[in-house]
Amino acid sequence: MTRREWLQRSGMGMGALACGALLEASIGENPLAPKKPPLPAKAKRIIHFFMNGGPSQVDTFDPKPALARYAGKTIPIHLRTERKTGAAFPSAFRFDKHGQSGIEVSEIFSHVASCADDLCVIRSMHTNVPNHEPSLMMMNCGAENQVRPSFGSWITYGLGSENQNLPGFIALCPGGLPVRGSNNWRSAFLPGAYQGTHIDTKYAEVERLVENIRNHTTSREQQRSQLDLLAELNRRHLQVRSEDAMLEARIQTFELAYRMQMEAAEVFDIGNEPAHVREMYGDTLYGRQTLIGRRLLERGVRFVQIWQGAGQPWDAHNNVEENHRRLAGECDRPIAALIRDLKQRGMLDSTLVIWGGEFGRTPTVELAAFGSNFNGSGGRDHNSYGFSMWLAGGGVKPGFVHGATDDFGFRSEQNRVHVHDLHATLLHLLGFDHETFTYRYAGRDFRLTDVHGDIVRAILA
Image (cartoon, rainbow, N blue to C red):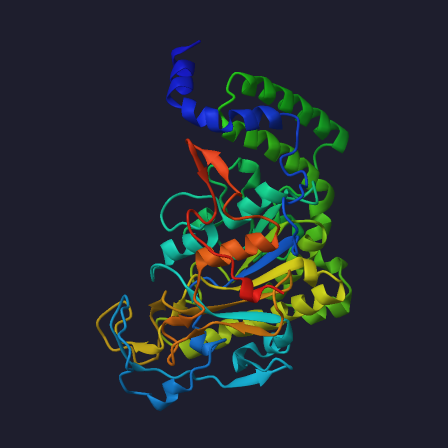
C-alpha cells in the first residue's frame, strides 16, 4: 500500500463505511433501474415549474382586495423585511373566479386559470428566511445552508428511472444557471448517478441542446468496444479504491451517455410532434422546453424541473407590473397546455405538476431597491412569511384552495404549510414515508425533511 492509498483509506474511512457496500453492489448494476416504492403511491413522476426569483402571491394566486382600500396607507401589520418598505401596494391585475371551483386567479395567468378545476392551490406556504440562496436550497434540497441532495435526486434514488437510456432527473434551464447553480439539482452524498442533468434550452437544435448526442466519427460497434475496454479499466481501478464514489459515478455516466445516443436525439426533437400539439404549446422558448418536458415524462424520466431562466427573473424589486406580466406571458400558455396534454394522454393522475418559487413578495411597496432612492416604479421585496404554490394531478385534490394569508397577503395564518411539510406530502404521494426514507452518510441517517415535516392530508384526494 502506498502512502497516498493509506491516507485515502484511513482519512476517508468513515465515508467508505457509509457507501462502500452500495458501491460494491452497484458494480455491474444500473443504479437507475426502476424500483417500487414501499407504500401505495398515487404519483409516479414529477414536473416542477420553478419560478426562480420569487413571484408575488398577491399578483398571481392570492387576491387581496384590502390592499386597494389601504393603497398609499400603512397596513396594520408589523412587517420584518430585508429592505425598507412603505405603504400598501395593490395589485395592478384583475382577479376573476374560474371553473366550477371558483378559484380566483390573476389575469396574467388566464390560460392556467382555464385549468382551475385541476389545480390545488396552497396559499399558506412559508419558509425560513427571505434570501434567495438559502430559500432556493430549502425548496430544492430541504436545507438552507448545508450541502444536501436535491429533491429530484432523492426521488431517483428511491424510484430509479423507467427509461435506462435517459437520465432519471433532468433540469431544463435556458441561458445558463440559476442562483446557486447546479446545487439546485445536485446529488451531494447520494451516488452521483442520481444527480440532475442540466440542459440549456435556449438552443433549439438537438445537437446544441445535448453535446455529442450523435457520434459522427465511429460506428456503434466500435464505440461499444471502446467503452467496454474503458469500463473494464475503470472497474479494476475501482476495486482498490472502493471508497471513490466519484469514480463509480463516472463509470455509470459513460454508460448513460452511450445509451442516450440511442434515444435522446429523438426525445429532444419536438419536430416529431404533430403540428397541432406544437401549436398548443406555442413556438417560444418556454413552449419548446415544456413540450420537451412532457416528452421526457412520457418516456420514463422520473423528475423534470423547468426553470424560467438563469439568475432570478421573478425578483421584481422594481416595476413588478411589467416584470410579472412579461414572465407570466412566457409560461402561462405552455403550462396550461401541459396540464391538458397530460389529461388527454391519461398521465395527469400519475404525474405531480408543481408550480412556485422559493418564496413570495411583500404586499407593500419597496422603498430602497439596491440603494437609498425611492423606488417609484413599484417593486416588492422578498417575503418568506407567506406565499402561494399550486399542485395538479398525482393524487391531490383538484379545484381546491388550502390555507390563507392575512388580509393583506403578508403572513400565512390559516393551515400553514412549511416547505418541509410540502416535501413530506409529495413523498407520501410518491409512496414514501418521509421519516423512514433515509440514506446513511457519515454515521447518520439523513432524510429530505431532516427532522421536520408533516403530511398535509387536507390536500390529498
